[in-house]
Length: 77
Image 1 (cartoon, rainbow, N blue to C red):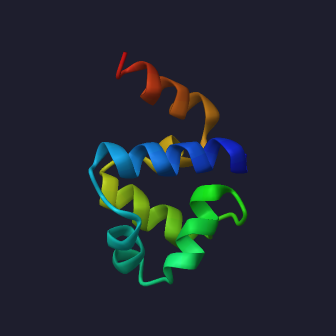
Image 2: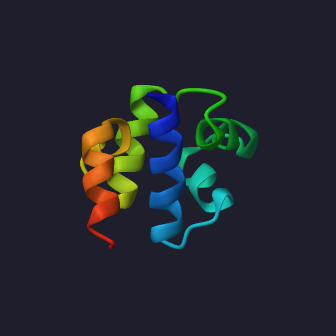
């Protein structure tokens, strides 16, 4: 799941034109921690996933669920 999640985290951030610095400040975490989430080195806790879903105005499943993420990607083709 981390591979899909890291791809969705980066895609959502870029789609919304946010820098990693903007997102880590919103979450109240260090940039290093956010980079670990986005690179797949660490899996974000539920509270971070919920906060990201609010920031990006998407269902949390779109961040963590493979099928939801694939649907999200296809919507941009």
